Length: 360
Image 1 (cartoon, one colour):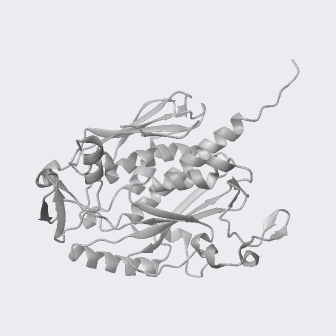
Image 2: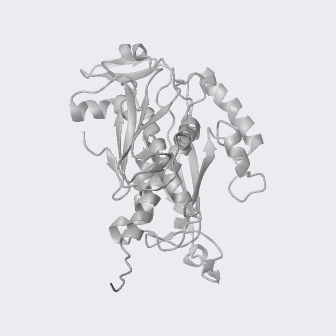
Image 3: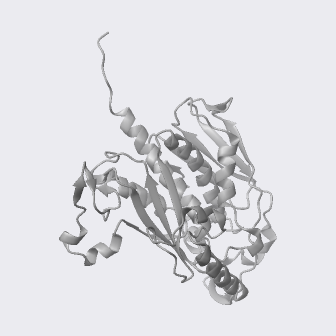
């Protein structure tokens, strides 16, 4: 299986299956001398963990750093992070061994490889995102040295209206105070009621994640085929359940006039609006980068559904086991991680291509 490595200079290779012995990542290209502790990794993994109060798989997610760090500083050599699976219940999937679950990658993996790990989806499971969060923790630590911060939150979920960035009842502090990562206490309570209703009915919901990058200077990114927004889009879309992304005004720009959509000067190379989402020509403008990503409903639901068997026959299933009613709040952490990996990669690329030569 190819395509398990992401990045050019800041390169991440992830490994492991949902119900295998462990999952993890190898990070190559991280500069030496960066302060990095196990707690930096634990913090991001804890944020990604599901809430067991809704019956989801409850893993401890205790990471181990096997290489690349000595006395809490990176060595410049590959950093290996591993997390052993402890709470998998593979028996929950035995009845689905020959069934291709609707909305999952079962059919496509079976067709492509002729074999698949049916236990929780194997490599296509949401558990794979743990490795992204671990690698993202390292990238975030690197970006923090440059004053770059990434914040993602749930901006739409289960049809509940949630305050938008800039509205009076939007509160950044609320994002990490509730398990739904909603920037409003009132909205979080409404979401809780709706999610509980869906859970009782054996159904699920999708949602939208908004992501804001602050502290990034102008000039990051490459034109034409390696644009900053193109790389970010590819990174975020690579998250299993993501089905769409838009930057700045996004699709709404299609209904605007040029006079409405252009971000006009406000002085000192600043702009009055940010319809471009902080990126023009594939290069950062120095404004905040802002984008939204849409995530589909969790496909594992307990309602009766028709499904194909491997032999092509139809059957009816009710999926058992421990599944999130909505993965969107946890996906926010993964969106941050993938954004951090892209920015760290571009940051190293920008640094590497500019040299100052001195007379000897």
